[in-house]
Length: 111
Image (tube, rainbow, N blue to C red; front, top):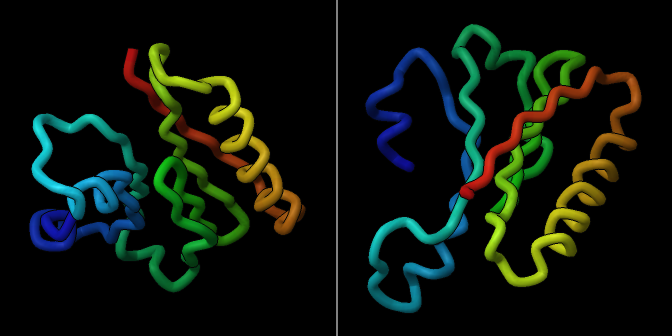
């Protein structure tokens, strides 16, 4: 994650990795867990605030735009529908705190 600051100097990152917790428990093979990232142009830094960062979603406010990036669980994940429901409920609760904002949601998942 530190490479975003080093390699992409025209933007700044709001990022949360789900691997942080797992790396503390020993070595990993591959990238078995998700994370969420939003890149914002440096020119917008003055009107940008981080609303919330979690393992599976990041919410950033840019002016009157609420930008949400969500990483959804893949098809084989235990309790997948419950996890998705929890994520969407959490995101919507943040949305209700900024009713004046336009909402933009991006999402991804592994098949």
